[in-house]
Length: 87
Image (tube, rainbow, N blue to C red; front, side):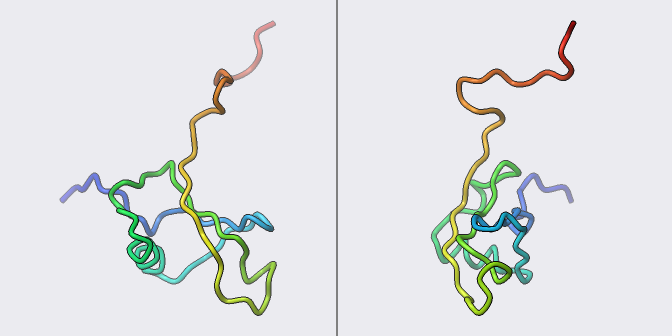
């Protein structure tokens, strides 16, 4: 059976301090979104989670603030790049 629903467990999580990916245990993303009151059905592949730290750059710290962000296709006011320049 095909479902058009986005799996929130596939959200990319990145540390805002060091830029490294953050790996969570299975189910953590779904639990955190539910706890924060975020409707997982409103998320898609343009969304990601940004963590305000991670165990790599802050050893010994076990809890970090996070936020969900939606990425734009291109920065506002800038045209999208369209491949190689034409001479």
